[in-house]
Structures are given as C-alpha cells and as structure tokens.
Length: 358
Image (cartoon, rainbow, N blue to C red; front, top):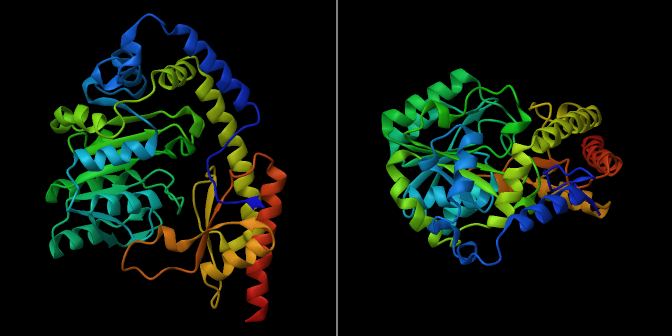
C-alpha cells in the first residue's frame, strides 16, 4: 500500500543522523548520578529548559518540555482547566484537538472559517450565544486545510479572545513550513496563549520531544500537570534534540524539507488540479475536494482498492458539522517521492472516474 496518510516529512539520512545524536547524548550522562534517573519534572531538566527557552526566545519559567506535540496540547488543556468546559474549533480542524477534548469531557463548538482560518466575527457570535472558555488554533499551515493566517487575522482573533477572556491553544507543529508567517499568537498575547511546538514534523517523531510555553498565570500548575501525565520527559531524547537544534542541524533539515515539500506539493497540485484547495506551498499535506456524488468514505475505499491509503474528512470534522466531500492527502508517508507521485495519480484517477460517471 502507498501511504498518503502521514504528513510528517522524513529524509533518507535522518535515521543514522538521529542515532548519532542519541549516542552522543548518552555519553554525556553520568551513570553514578541518581538524579538523572529521577522524574525530570523535579528539576533534573532545568538546564534543558534554559536551553529550550533560549532557542524559543521565551522566559524560562514559562517554558516546559513535553513528550511531543500531542502531550503539549493535552497539558495545555489540563492547565487551562478544560474538563467540562467549552472549546471552540474551526468546522474542519485537527483530529487530536477533537480527540483530546472528548477525553477530557470538554464540549466542542464549531466556528466558520475562510482561507485564513477561523473567522473572528463568527467566534464572537459563538461567544455571545453561549459560554466559550478556549479556542484551538493552528494559524501557520493549518492541518488539514493548509492555510496561513495573516497578521490582521491574528490581531482580530486576539481581540476577540481578550474581549471574552478566552484561553488560546496554539499548535505550531507546521509553522516551520511557512518561514515568513506573521508572529505567533503567543507573541501577540502571551498572557492567554499556550504555545505548543512538537518536533515530529520539523525533525522526526522519534525525537519524542516537544516544547510548551504557558501563560504566566498557570506556571504554578505545570509541575503537577507534568507529574500526572508523564512524570516528566526523557533527558536522553531532549538532550539529543537540543543538541541538533543548537548546532544548526535542525535548520539544515528544515531547509531540505522545505525544498522537498515545495517540490512534492507542486507536483501533487499539477496532477490534482482544482481539486486541491489553496494552501502553503511547502506544506506536506493537501485538502482535496471531491466531486458531487462521491463521499470521502467512497473515495477512501476506491483508493484502497487500488493500493493507496488516504485520510477521510470525518476525522477532521467538528461535532454538528456536515462532513464535507473531501480527503486529506499526506505527502510524507513515503520517503521515496516516486511512490507519493504514484499515489497522487491514483487519487486523481479516482476523482476523474467519478466525474466521468456523473
């Protein structure tokens, strides 16, 4: 099967590269120092947090290490006290935001969006219609839609959040794919934004490392949140990750991923034509509209019968919203670009076949 599900980019040389960083990180550890065997949240990761804060340009007391991006968003929801409360999301949004909200018993309300993401006026209307406590946002290369919000849009969203006292949970997993994007929500409104940056997309899921910057008002809660979700994160993995960040390796990997992502994205759009909706040119995922009469389930089955796995729209659709006729195509499920291109051709042929049969 050709995998068009995963959208995290991997380069052929990364496996051996990561092994090298893990070996060097292990050599830095001290076998006789019992502190390195204790839960990291008890202060064993203090130096690593300082290094992370320096890289992110954030206050160290508000900067925390997580076990990847998913852990970061879950910690954010817990620190924001979202259990039993209400979070606003776009009508089409990231599956993990929906799953984690369900896990915590949070209510989810959908908000209309356009080519820049959530509409501020629609969010305001939602807040006026009923209590909303937080909003989940992915302003820089949204998953699955691929948009990048303008500076004006971000300012307008922050204004609504401040007006109604909303927390904002900002998942910046894909921000590196839009190097010229406007400032993050965390820069615009640090007093209410939980900023999550995992390494799965910019480097690799094996890094097992993420970064979380929290509002000053919840700093006192974070040790407890870490304690009861993971007892801390891996000193070994975090050391290796920060080493490759600081020596410039991550920048080099990102540059290569941007170049390859732009090539794959352009090639896929050339095959899919207008079915591929507009989005960031370096994104490793595309939102693909389907013709009338074809549901995402029908399209998924047709693609699977021809040996291609794709993601259907239901998993990205907020509660109460009609599921659109659409697919998400991931361009990172195969290291070999030729297999991705072959899979995209199959998707295009499935769509074209439906259009001919109408």
